[in-house]
Length: 496
Image (cartoon, rainbow, N blue to C red; front, side, top):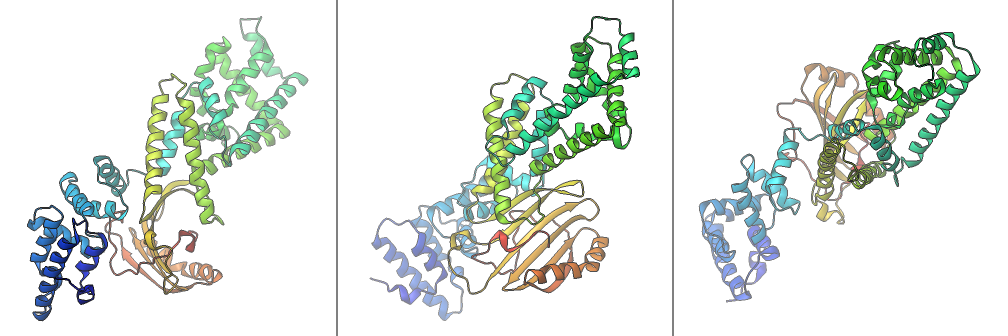
Protein backbone atom coordinates (compact mmCIF):
# COMPACT_ATOMS: atom_id res chain seq x y z
CA UNK A 1 0.00 0.00 0.00
CA UNK A 2 1.37 3.43 -0.94
CA UNK A 3 0.97 6.16 1.63
CA UNK A 4 0.50 9.78 0.65
CA UNK A 5 2.94 11.79 2.79
CA UNK A 6 0.47 14.67 2.90
CA UNK A 7 -1.90 12.50 4.90
CA UNK A 8 0.52 12.43 7.83
CA UNK A 9 2.50 15.59 7.17
CA UNK A 10 1.63 17.01 10.58
CA UNK A 11 3.14 14.05 12.37
CA UNK A 12 6.27 15.34 14.03
CA UNK A 13 7.71 11.85 14.08
CA UNK A 14 7.14 11.46 10.34
CA UNK A 15 9.00 14.69 9.58
CA UNK A 16 12.06 13.50 11.45
CA UNK A 17 11.75 10.03 10.01
CA UNK A 18 11.62 10.98 6.35
CA UNK A 19 14.44 13.49 6.65
CA UNK A 20 17.02 11.34 8.37
CA UNK A 21 16.05 7.69 8.89
CA UNK A 22 18.35 5.01 7.47
CA UNK A 23 16.16 2.34 5.84
CA UNK A 24 16.91 -0.67 3.73
CA UNK A 25 14.24 -0.10 1.07
CA UNK A 26 11.19 1.90 0.10
CA UNK A 27 8.99 -1.08 0.94
CA UNK A 28 10.20 -0.93 4.54
CA UNK A 29 9.48 2.78 4.60
CA UNK A 30 5.98 2.23 3.26
CA UNK A 31 5.30 -0.43 5.87
CA UNK A 32 6.43 1.85 8.68
CA UNK A 33 4.49 4.81 7.33
CA UNK A 34 1.39 2.73 7.00
CA UNK A 35 1.59 1.67 10.64
CA UNK A 36 2.34 5.23 11.72
CA UNK A 37 -0.55 6.51 9.64
CA UNK A 38 -2.97 4.04 11.18
CA UNK A 39 -1.75 4.74 14.70
CA UNK A 40 -1.86 8.48 14.08
CA UNK A 41 -5.47 8.29 12.91
CA UNK A 42 -6.43 6.19 15.94
CA UNK A 43 -4.66 8.52 18.32
CA UNK A 44 -6.23 11.52 16.65
CA UNK A 45 -9.72 10.13 17.15
CA UNK A 46 -8.94 9.38 20.78
CA UNK A 47 -7.17 12.71 21.34
CA UNK A 48 -3.93 10.89 22.17
CA UNK A 49 -0.65 12.64 21.23
CA UNK A 50 1.38 10.89 18.58
CA UNK A 51 4.35 10.33 20.88
CA UNK A 52 2.21 8.31 23.31
CA UNK A 53 1.84 5.63 20.70
CA UNK A 54 4.74 3.38 21.64
CA UNK A 55 3.82 0.78 19.03
CA UNK A 56 4.94 2.97 16.18
CA UNK A 57 8.14 3.82 18.06
CA UNK A 58 8.87 0.13 18.49
CA UNK A 59 8.50 -0.31 14.74
CA UNK A 60 10.85 2.57 14.23
CA UNK A 61 13.44 1.06 16.61
CA UNK A 62 13.26 -2.26 14.81
CA UNK A 63 13.97 -0.51 11.52
CA UNK A 64 17.06 1.05 13.14
CA UNK A 65 18.24 -2.35 14.41
CA UNK A 66 17.76 -1.27 18.02
CA UNK A 67 15.89 -3.14 20.73
CA UNK A 68 12.35 -1.75 21.24
CA UNK A 69 13.02 -1.33 24.94
CA UNK A 70 11.33 1.18 27.21
CA UNK A 71 14.63 3.05 27.58
CA UNK A 72 15.17 3.34 23.82
CA UNK A 73 11.60 4.52 23.34
CA UNK A 74 12.30 7.30 25.84
CA UNK A 75 15.49 8.21 23.94
CA UNK A 76 13.49 8.67 20.72
CA UNK A 77 11.02 10.89 22.54
CA UNK A 78 13.90 12.96 23.91
CA UNK A 79 15.30 13.43 20.39
CA UNK A 80 11.90 14.47 19.07
CA UNK A 81 11.25 16.88 21.94
CA UNK A 82 14.61 18.54 21.26
CA UNK A 83 14.01 18.87 17.52
CA UNK A 84 16.82 16.46 16.70
CA UNK A 85 16.70 14.06 13.75
CA UNK A 86 15.77 10.46 14.55
CA UNK A 87 18.36 8.39 12.78
CA UNK A 88 20.60 5.48 13.57
CA UNK A 89 23.64 7.61 14.43
CA UNK A 90 21.83 9.92 16.85
CA UNK A 91 20.11 7.05 18.59
CA UNK A 92 23.37 5.14 18.94
CA UNK A 93 25.08 8.26 20.32
CA UNK A 94 22.45 8.89 22.97
CA UNK A 95 22.52 5.21 23.99
CA UNK A 96 26.32 5.30 24.15
CA UNK A 97 26.30 8.52 26.19
CA UNK A 98 23.83 7.10 28.71
CA UNK A 99 26.27 4.28 29.43
CA UNK A 100 29.49 6.31 29.18
CA UNK A 101 28.74 9.45 31.22
CA UNK A 102 28.02 9.28 34.93
CA UNK A 103 26.79 12.86 35.37
CA UNK A 104 24.24 14.56 33.07
CA UNK A 105 24.41 11.78 30.43
CA UNK A 106 21.35 12.89 28.44
CA UNK A 107 22.28 16.59 28.51
CA UNK A 108 25.80 15.80 27.31
CA UNK A 109 24.43 13.50 24.62
CA UNK A 110 22.06 16.17 23.29
CA UNK A 111 24.82 18.82 23.32
CA UNK A 112 27.20 16.55 21.38
CA UNK A 113 24.52 15.47 18.89
CA UNK A 114 23.58 19.10 18.25
CA UNK A 115 27.22 19.84 17.45
CA UNK A 116 27.92 16.73 15.37
CA UNK A 117 30.34 15.33 17.95
CA UNK A 118 30.62 11.69 18.89
CA UNK A 119 30.61 10.92 22.63
CA UNK A 120 34.02 10.05 24.05
CA UNK A 121 35.42 9.82 27.57
CA UNK A 122 37.75 12.74 26.79
CA UNK A 123 34.90 15.00 25.63
CA UNK A 124 32.86 14.05 28.68
CA UNK A 125 35.72 15.03 30.98
CA UNK A 126 36.19 18.31 29.14
CA UNK A 127 32.49 19.18 29.41
CA UNK A 128 32.65 18.37 33.14
CA UNK A 129 35.48 20.90 33.50
CA UNK A 130 33.42 23.55 31.72
CA UNK A 131 30.45 22.83 33.98
CA UNK A 132 32.56 23.06 37.15
CA UNK A 133 34.41 26.14 35.78
CA UNK A 134 37.74 24.31 36.18
CA UNK A 135 38.62 25.06 32.56
CA UNK A 136 39.10 28.81 32.24
CA UNK A 137 41.15 30.19 29.40
CA UNK A 138 42.74 33.04 31.38
CA UNK A 139 44.15 30.47 33.85
CA UNK A 140 45.44 28.34 30.98
CA UNK A 141 47.22 31.29 29.36
CA UNK A 142 48.71 32.41 32.67
CA UNK A 143 49.88 28.87 33.40
CA UNK A 144 51.58 28.71 30.01
CA UNK A 145 53.47 31.99 30.51
CA UNK A 146 54.44 31.05 34.06
CA UNK A 147 56.03 27.84 32.82
CA UNK A 148 57.93 29.73 30.11
CA UNK A 149 59.27 32.14 32.73
CA UNK A 150 60.75 29.16 34.64
CA UNK A 151 62.96 28.11 31.73
CA UNK A 152 66.69 28.79 31.84
CA UNK A 153 67.66 32.10 30.27
CA UNK A 154 69.10 30.66 27.05
CA UNK A 155 66.03 28.58 26.26
CA UNK A 156 63.71 31.41 27.23
CA UNK A 157 65.38 33.86 24.87
CA UNK A 158 65.09 31.40 21.99
CA UNK A 159 61.40 30.93 22.68
CA UNK A 160 60.77 34.66 22.95
CA UNK A 161 62.53 35.14 19.64
CA UNK A 162 60.14 32.80 17.82
CA UNK A 163 56.83 32.71 19.67
CA UNK A 164 55.37 35.93 18.23
CA UNK A 165 56.34 35.29 14.60
CA UNK A 166 53.58 35.81 12.02
CA UNK A 167 51.27 37.42 14.56
CA UNK A 168 50.02 40.96 15.06
CA UNK A 169 52.39 41.15 18.04
CA UNK A 170 55.59 40.45 16.11
CA UNK A 171 56.52 44.07 15.35
CA UNK A 172 55.52 45.26 18.83
CA UNK A 173 57.68 42.58 20.47
CA UNK A 174 60.67 43.41 18.26
CA UNK A 175 60.33 47.14 18.99
CA UNK A 176 60.18 46.42 22.73
CA UNK A 177 63.36 44.35 22.48
CA UNK A 178 65.05 47.15 20.54
CA UNK A 179 64.01 49.82 23.05
CA UNK A 180 65.21 47.64 25.90
CA UNK A 181 68.68 47.22 24.40
CA UNK A 182 68.96 50.95 23.80
CA UNK A 183 67.98 51.61 27.40
CA UNK A 184 70.74 49.31 28.70
CA UNK A 185 73.30 51.07 26.49
CA UNK A 186 72.17 54.44 27.87
CA UNK A 187 72.79 53.21 31.41
CA UNK A 188 76.25 51.89 30.55
CA UNK A 189 77.12 55.20 28.91
CA UNK A 190 75.97 57.00 32.04
CA UNK A 191 78.22 54.80 34.21
CA UNK A 192 81.23 55.36 31.98
CA UNK A 193 80.76 59.13 31.82
CA UNK A 194 80.27 59.74 35.53
CA UNK A 195 82.03 58.81 38.72
CA UNK A 196 79.66 57.12 41.13
CA UNK A 197 81.50 56.92 44.41
CA UNK A 198 79.22 54.36 46.05
CA UNK A 199 79.56 52.09 43.07
CA UNK A 200 83.34 52.44 43.09
CA UNK A 201 83.45 51.76 46.81
CA UNK A 202 81.64 48.48 46.26
CA UNK A 203 84.10 47.45 43.59
CA UNK A 204 87.03 48.40 45.82
CA UNK A 205 85.77 46.07 48.50
CA UNK A 206 85.65 43.13 46.11
CA UNK A 207 88.70 40.94 46.66
CA UNK A 208 89.08 40.12 42.98
CA UNK A 209 90.91 43.22 41.67
CA UNK A 210 91.10 41.85 38.14
CA UNK A 211 87.37 42.06 37.74
CA UNK A 212 86.04 43.91 34.68
CA UNK A 213 83.69 46.53 36.15
CA UNK A 214 81.98 47.23 32.84
CA UNK A 215 81.33 43.53 32.26
CA UNK A 216 79.85 43.16 35.74
CA UNK A 217 77.50 46.07 35.18
CA UNK A 218 76.52 44.74 31.77
CA UNK A 219 75.67 41.31 33.16
CA UNK A 220 73.53 42.75 35.92
CA UNK A 221 71.69 44.94 33.43
CA UNK A 222 71.14 42.00 31.09
CA UNK A 223 69.85 39.91 33.94
CA UNK A 224 67.34 42.47 35.15
CA UNK A 225 66.30 43.91 31.81
CA UNK A 226 66.20 40.85 29.58
CA UNK A 227 63.58 39.74 27.11
CA UNK A 228 61.53 37.74 29.57
CA UNK A 229 59.96 40.99 30.74
CA UNK A 230 57.56 40.28 27.87
CA UNK A 231 56.06 37.29 29.65
CA UNK A 232 57.04 37.53 33.34
CA UNK A 233 54.45 39.80 34.91
CA UNK A 234 55.76 39.27 38.44
CA UNK A 235 59.16 40.56 37.42
CA UNK A 236 57.57 43.68 35.91
CA UNK A 237 55.72 44.30 39.17
CA UNK A 238 58.92 43.88 41.17
CA UNK A 239 60.78 46.35 38.98
CA UNK A 240 57.96 48.86 39.33
CA UNK A 241 58.05 48.47 43.11
CA UNK A 242 61.65 49.67 43.16
CA UNK A 243 60.48 53.05 41.91
CA UNK A 244 56.89 53.36 43.05
CA UNK A 245 57.11 51.71 46.49
CA UNK A 246 60.87 51.61 47.04
CA UNK A 247 60.64 47.86 47.78
CA UNK A 248 63.99 46.66 46.56
CA UNK A 249 63.89 43.64 48.89
CA UNK A 250 61.26 42.00 46.67
CA UNK A 251 63.98 41.31 44.12
CA UNK A 252 66.50 39.62 46.41
CA UNK A 253 65.49 36.06 45.59
CA UNK A 254 65.77 36.77 41.87
CA UNK A 255 69.52 37.26 41.89
CA UNK A 256 70.70 33.84 42.98
CA UNK A 257 71.22 32.79 39.37
CA UNK A 258 73.86 35.44 38.68
CA UNK A 259 76.05 35.10 41.79
CA UNK A 260 78.17 32.36 40.27
CA UNK A 261 78.19 33.91 36.79
CA UNK A 262 79.63 37.14 38.18
CA UNK A 263 82.02 35.31 40.52
CA UNK A 264 80.89 37.61 43.30
CA UNK A 265 79.47 36.84 46.70
CA UNK A 266 75.78 37.46 47.35
CA UNK A 267 76.21 40.63 49.43
CA UNK A 268 78.47 42.29 46.86
CA UNK A 269 76.11 41.41 44.02
CA UNK A 270 73.09 42.79 45.85
CA UNK A 271 74.93 45.99 46.79
CA UNK A 272 75.85 46.54 43.15
CA UNK A 273 72.31 45.76 42.13
CA UNK A 274 70.84 48.22 44.58
CA UNK A 275 73.25 50.97 43.63
CA UNK A 276 72.54 50.58 39.93
CA UNK A 277 68.83 51.14 40.59
CA UNK A 278 69.59 54.08 42.86
CA UNK A 279 71.55 55.66 40.01
CA UNK A 280 68.68 55.10 37.57
CA UNK A 281 66.23 56.62 40.06
CA UNK A 282 68.40 59.65 40.65
CA UNK A 283 68.67 60.43 36.94
CA UNK A 284 65.38 61.91 35.61
CA UNK A 285 66.14 60.94 32.02
CA UNK A 286 66.98 57.34 32.87
CA UNK A 287 64.09 57.11 35.27
CA UNK A 288 61.55 58.27 32.66
CA UNK A 289 62.98 55.88 30.09
CA UNK A 290 62.77 53.06 32.61
CA UNK A 291 59.11 53.78 33.41
CA UNK A 292 58.34 53.98 29.70
CA UNK A 293 59.94 50.56 29.12
CA UNK A 294 57.98 49.00 31.98
CA UNK A 295 54.75 50.53 30.67
CA UNK A 296 55.36 49.21 27.14
CA UNK A 297 56.11 45.68 28.35
CA UNK A 298 53.13 45.69 30.70
CA UNK A 299 50.83 46.86 27.90
CA UNK A 300 52.23 44.18 25.62
CA UNK A 301 51.53 41.44 28.19
CA UNK A 302 47.96 42.61 28.64
CA UNK A 303 47.40 42.55 24.88
CA UNK A 304 48.68 38.99 24.62
CA UNK A 305 46.98 37.58 27.72
CA UNK A 306 43.67 39.45 27.69
CA UNK A 307 41.17 40.51 25.05
CA UNK A 308 40.49 44.25 25.06
CA UNK A 309 36.76 44.93 24.76
CA UNK A 310 37.21 48.67 24.37
CA UNK A 311 35.72 49.60 20.98
CA UNK A 312 36.13 45.98 19.89
CA UNK A 313 34.34 44.06 17.16
CA UNK A 314 33.70 40.46 16.25
CA UNK A 315 36.67 40.68 13.86
CA UNK A 316 38.94 41.79 16.72
CA UNK A 317 37.85 38.80 18.77
CA UNK A 318 38.51 36.40 15.89
CA UNK A 319 41.93 37.96 15.38
CA UNK A 320 42.76 37.54 19.07
CA UNK A 321 42.00 33.82 19.02
CA UNK A 322 43.84 33.37 15.73
CA UNK A 323 46.87 35.04 17.31
CA UNK A 324 46.65 32.72 20.33
CA UNK A 325 46.56 29.74 17.99
CA UNK A 326 49.61 30.97 16.07
CA UNK A 327 51.56 31.57 19.29
CA UNK A 328 50.67 28.04 20.39
CA UNK A 329 51.90 26.57 17.11
CA UNK A 330 55.15 28.56 17.30
CA UNK A 331 55.74 27.35 20.86
CA UNK A 332 54.90 23.77 19.94
CA UNK A 333 57.47 23.80 17.14
CA UNK A 334 60.15 25.42 19.30
CA UNK A 335 59.76 23.56 22.58
CA UNK A 336 60.66 20.19 21.03
CA UNK A 337 64.27 21.37 20.78
CA UNK A 338 64.68 21.85 24.53
CA UNK A 339 65.63 19.35 27.20
CA UNK A 340 64.76 21.65 30.09
CA UNK A 341 62.65 19.97 32.77
CA UNK A 342 60.03 22.72 32.44
CA UNK A 343 59.55 22.11 28.71
CA UNK A 344 57.20 19.22 29.53
CA UNK A 345 55.08 21.58 31.65
CA UNK A 346 54.92 24.00 28.72
CA UNK A 347 53.83 21.19 26.42
CA UNK A 348 51.05 20.22 28.84
CA UNK A 349 49.95 23.85 29.17
CA UNK A 350 49.87 24.17 25.39
CA UNK A 351 47.83 21.01 25.01
CA UNK A 352 45.24 22.25 27.53
CA UNK A 353 44.99 25.65 25.85
CA UNK A 354 44.76 24.20 22.34
CA UNK A 355 42.15 21.66 23.42
CA UNK A 356 40.02 24.50 24.78
CA UNK A 357 40.37 26.65 21.65
CA UNK A 358 39.70 23.68 19.34
CA UNK A 359 36.58 22.75 21.32
CA UNK A 360 35.14 26.24 20.90
CA UNK A 361 36.05 26.36 17.21
CA UNK A 362 34.61 22.94 16.40
CA UNK A 363 31.12 23.51 17.78
CA UNK A 364 28.77 23.16 14.82
CA UNK A 365 25.44 24.28 16.20
CA UNK A 366 26.34 26.32 19.28
CA UNK A 367 28.38 29.39 20.05
CA UNK A 368 30.32 29.11 23.28
CA UNK A 369 33.27 31.39 23.96
CA UNK A 370 35.64 31.90 26.85
CA UNK A 371 37.25 35.32 26.69
CA UNK A 372 40.13 36.27 29.03
CA UNK A 373 39.63 39.75 30.47
CA UNK A 374 41.55 42.21 32.62
CA UNK A 375 38.99 44.34 34.44
CA UNK A 376 40.70 46.96 36.59
CA UNK A 377 43.63 44.59 37.14
CA UNK A 378 41.33 41.72 38.12
CA UNK A 379 41.84 38.78 35.81
CA UNK A 380 38.81 36.74 34.87
CA UNK A 381 37.19 34.80 32.04
CA UNK A 382 33.91 35.84 30.47
CA UNK A 383 31.85 32.93 29.20
CA UNK A 384 29.48 33.80 26.38
CA UNK A 385 26.69 31.52 25.19
CA UNK A 386 24.85 32.45 22.01
CA UNK A 387 21.57 30.66 21.41
CA UNK A 388 21.38 30.10 17.68
CA UNK A 389 21.31 27.43 15.04
CA UNK A 390 24.37 27.59 12.83
CA UNK A 391 22.84 25.16 10.37
CA UNK A 392 20.17 27.70 9.53
CA UNK A 393 22.30 30.81 9.70
CA UNK A 394 21.83 31.50 5.99
CA UNK A 395 18.05 31.41 6.24
CA UNK A 396 16.23 34.70 6.59
CA UNK A 397 14.36 35.17 9.85
CA UNK A 398 11.19 37.17 10.21
CA UNK A 399 12.86 39.60 12.60
CA UNK A 400 16.32 40.62 13.63
CA UNK A 401 16.49 38.77 16.91
CA UNK A 402 18.80 36.76 19.08
CA UNK A 403 19.62 35.70 22.61
CA UNK A 404 22.85 35.40 24.53
CA UNK A 405 24.09 34.87 28.05
CA UNK A 406 27.26 36.36 29.54
CA UNK A 407 28.69 34.76 32.69
CA UNK A 408 31.29 36.58 34.80
CA UNK A 409 33.00 36.28 38.16
CA UNK A 410 34.11 39.73 39.33
CA UNK A 411 36.18 40.90 42.27
CA UNK A 412 33.57 43.01 44.07
CA UNK A 413 30.33 42.05 42.35
CA UNK A 414 30.85 38.29 42.67
CA UNK A 415 29.31 35.86 40.20
CA UNK A 416 26.78 37.30 37.83
CA UNK A 417 25.05 36.30 34.62
CA UNK A 418 23.32 38.56 32.12
CA UNK A 419 20.73 37.02 29.83
CA UNK A 420 20.08 39.25 26.83
CA UNK A 421 17.14 38.83 24.48
CA UNK A 422 16.90 41.04 21.40
CA UNK A 423 13.92 41.30 19.07
CA UNK A 424 14.38 43.86 16.33
CA UNK A 425 15.57 46.97 18.22
CA UNK A 426 14.14 45.97 21.60
CA UNK A 427 16.49 44.51 24.19
CA UNK A 428 15.51 42.73 27.41
CA UNK A 429 18.09 42.02 30.12
CA UNK A 430 17.85 39.67 33.04
CA UNK A 431 20.60 39.93 35.65
CA UNK A 432 21.20 36.79 37.69
CA UNK A 433 23.17 37.82 40.75
CA UNK A 434 25.03 36.14 43.59
CA UNK A 435 25.03 39.24 45.83
CA UNK A 436 22.08 41.42 46.76
CA UNK A 437 24.37 44.46 46.83
CA UNK A 438 25.12 43.92 43.15
CA UNK A 439 21.43 44.38 42.34
CA UNK A 440 21.48 47.82 43.94
CA UNK A 441 24.59 48.80 41.99
CA UNK A 442 23.12 47.65 38.67
CA UNK A 443 19.81 49.39 39.41
CA UNK A 444 21.61 52.65 40.13
CA UNK A 445 23.37 52.49 36.75
CA UNK A 446 20.52 51.40 34.48
CA UNK A 447 20.59 54.85 32.86
CA UNK A 448 24.14 54.21 31.67
CA UNK A 449 23.04 50.98 30.03
CA UNK A 450 19.98 52.63 28.55
CA UNK A 451 22.00 55.51 27.07
CA UNK A 452 24.59 53.14 25.67
CA UNK A 453 21.92 51.09 23.90
CA UNK A 454 20.28 54.25 22.55
CA UNK A 455 23.58 55.20 20.95
CA UNK A 456 23.42 51.85 19.17
CA UNK A 457 19.82 52.52 18.05
CA UNK A 458 18.58 49.95 20.56
CA UNK A 459 15.83 50.27 23.14
CA UNK A 460 16.05 48.77 26.65
CA UNK A 461 12.55 47.33 26.81
CA UNK A 462 12.79 45.84 30.28
CA UNK A 463 15.26 44.76 32.94
CA UNK A 464 14.79 42.16 35.65
CA UNK A 465 16.74 40.55 38.47
CA UNK A 466 16.98 36.99 39.68
CA UNK A 467 19.00 35.25 42.36
CA UNK A 468 21.82 33.16 40.92
CA UNK A 469 21.21 29.75 42.46
CA UNK A 470 23.05 27.66 39.88
CA UNK A 471 25.54 28.86 37.28
CA UNK A 472 24.67 28.38 33.64
CA UNK A 473 26.80 25.90 31.71
CA UNK A 474 27.16 24.65 28.16
CA UNK A 475 24.64 21.86 28.78
CA UNK A 476 22.05 24.02 30.55
CA UNK A 477 18.69 24.57 28.89
CA UNK A 478 17.05 27.98 29.02
CA UNK A 479 13.30 27.68 28.66
CA UNK A 480 10.86 30.13 27.09
CA UNK A 481 13.51 31.99 25.11
CA UNK A 482 13.22 32.83 21.45
CA UNK A 483 16.05 31.37 19.40
CA UNK A 484 17.27 33.21 16.36
CA UNK A 485 18.50 31.43 13.26
CA UNK A 486 20.76 34.20 12.10
CA UNK A 487 22.16 35.69 15.30
CA UNK A 488 25.77 36.85 15.21
CA UNK A 489 28.04 37.61 18.13
CA UNK A 490 28.65 41.07 16.72
CA UNK A 491 25.01 41.96 17.40
CA UNK A 492 26.04 42.67 20.98
CA UNK A 493 28.72 44.87 22.39
CA UNK A 494 30.15 43.50 25.63
CA UNK A 495 30.53 46.98 27.10
CA UNK A 496 26.76 47.12 27.44
